[in-house]
Length: 629
Image (tube, rainbow, N blue to C red; front, side, top):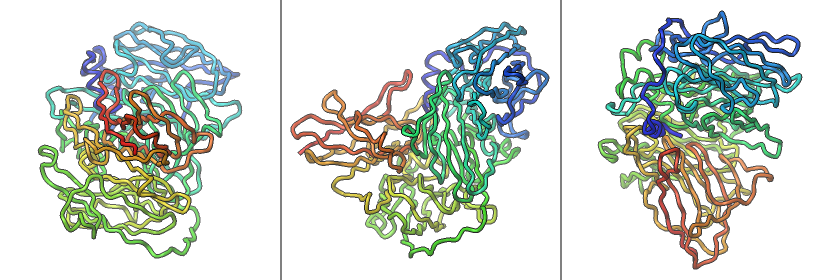
């Protein structure tokens, strides 16, 4: 589910550069924004002619580095990445002719009756094949192809962009959504410092800061269909707003959720080959982002200017960048224009908080450690480096003014994860948050910045770095944030805040060594003491850099029970606030609350956490004793 999974693919014999030898055809590949359906729809029949052929792809804009790949095109048009969109009403008969202009056999998926990876045809080099299927259940699907023996979810190289979306609309529906297809291309390099040659991750064929800018007006509603045809999972996170999860699918089946099944989230994990539909409303103006919360997936690791672990500064100068922040990869920028004039309510006096950013050299080998420290605290005066940072307890509706003082040697920024901010300037994304005339800048060493916001919702949230995220977050720049009100108090006796992260950054994402998972900053936490029969609220926060976390409460080998309460700070609907086994696999950026009743005293209980088993990577789990008194 992270870049480390590429190690498992490599161990299974995956070549570092997939794709059979091809004749180079220097045709530019267009980025496809998935807004124009392909083919001709007439009398309930869609006729479409596609061709798989070689072309030159520019994921970082026309002045960036290029990659020669295979891509789909409509007959007579330029090739596109993603491939041409197939979008039809339910019941439409789709008649597709696909020509393979490549020098290798093409295995094509998605144009059969069962769609997805369960149907396939093989098209010989420079041959054509006709296929027919009738559009069945409405939903989000896809087609994909390969020229190598690896699975569709294992493609990395020349055939990794042979993908396209298929959308089946209900009868009479008007297309009022956006479709975003995630893909990955890359080479491994066992001799490089990072384990990677060069890699790019894209949304609709482009990598930030070249991805499409989404323009909205305050009050607009948006619906996104997300298709993941990369080799890795992606926890997709929306800044500043909640979205409603409306559907999940796997390319074969798509499940449209009923009202009782829908829930709110700010981060949702989408695995390889999965689809997701979400909806949200832009109630506040400003500049926001929608991005993958794996820190490596928006770092220099996924820039084509990173060649064998070293950034090519001369290459970087050839195309637009958002330096000094330098995000890359799976990020979409969203601009919400104001509508009318907002009548701001009279604000209560702000509570002032001083948050220090500290750095200490050689904490993780040669890498520095970082910490957030509360100004005026004992840690402030002692020079301590607490990890995680202090749990910030705020009151719903009470304004705060947070002054961030950068005492480190790197630049700094803080993102208030899950908080519905009224002003995007406080959102913490340097070079993007705010507006054209009031753009947030990173905080230089020795400088400070004050941001203002009023938390509108009680729940469990977090704050973390949004600068040099791949290094700063696992090195300590994160903390829990709890917003309280009379109905959602925080009890020092009954609440257990458990924050999961990494014990330092990873240099080589293929070979490792990989840092151990920490719970509240500790790789070997002390025993957890509970009182028999007492009700507890477990607030679980995942802010690992680049991997999911596994968690469970156990009695011997058996899993205990708990009741789900909230996701990402939003209370779950009654239909989902249910008792269930106390086990959880969750991704960076996800937050869960559970109610747990401590069992009887005298048993052998444990809290288990760590890295789950993923493909051929073993589970690396740690046990913490639970002492029930």
